[in-house]
Image (cartoon, rainbow, N blue to C red; front, top):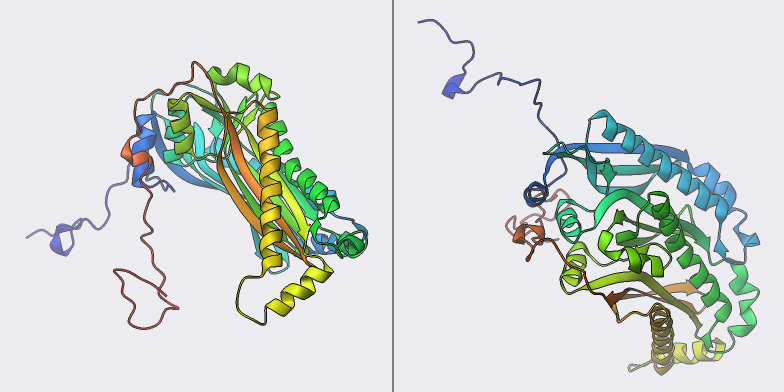
Length: 403
């Protein structure tokens, strides 16, 4: 019998045929994302990566001079991080062009610390237009599910954008603030510094969106990361610069670009109800426990029960931050502030910062969505199907892995 060299045991082809005109794609999209992309006329393409590596020595040399700062932005570090992020994004976009993609979805901008170096990394997945409509190539921070929600809410993606600021609380707390820390309450010098600094990132993402001829930045995600030394942090906002014809006049009333940190599903839902985001609003207050209050609270830590001084301090900081949000939203003519998130940071030396973030919205005639409902595939959260048990104890239940 003549041997068939194309078959092995079980009749499995040893060398499956490869179609060079339609090579296998390697994508970061899930099945749910693929389904949602198909609904808006796209097919998944290859995973894309762009990076840039800088020496940490540069940051260290700058960090040694932090003591000369009285708090606020450290522009040299901001600019260095900005350059690194932009270089990695530029290389990512070059790779997108080389594969002939119509867009890239799920774009992220990350920082990875190596031994002595800092890497700026941009990652996302290509999308191809099924209709070959020839629209401009876009990049977006939205994943495939989010992209459906945003496009169906009439936000056409233009470009992935970010705004960042590197800052330090500085050693002012040991100089200017030392006297005022003897009394409990808000330290306005720091509140002003942090309010100004945190809004710089928002201003920069808005300015970046304007260069893309966008009238909105949606899906904003805010992160605060340590950079190099414990005294320096970066606040970065990433989002998608978009254009929505329905909100053109509203955008003009708030400076040309509306901003929102509502999720894609929330963006769709409020559009269905006739609401438009106006602006991402922030409020921050820095409070001191005060010398006398600090001593009292330490004594009370020795016994069980409520520490009244800390209760009042944190309550006051929270109220002050929320009042700042409310005042800004009222100045914009907003009907509501949605999705308020609050964070507390221990700044040391008896100082805490209370940060509140939300999105001011207004009900407007003529706002609508393309579809009546969101498909379930757009809101189902993907489950993690990879479990690392290498460092776990013996007897791990692989049906429900836990440490």
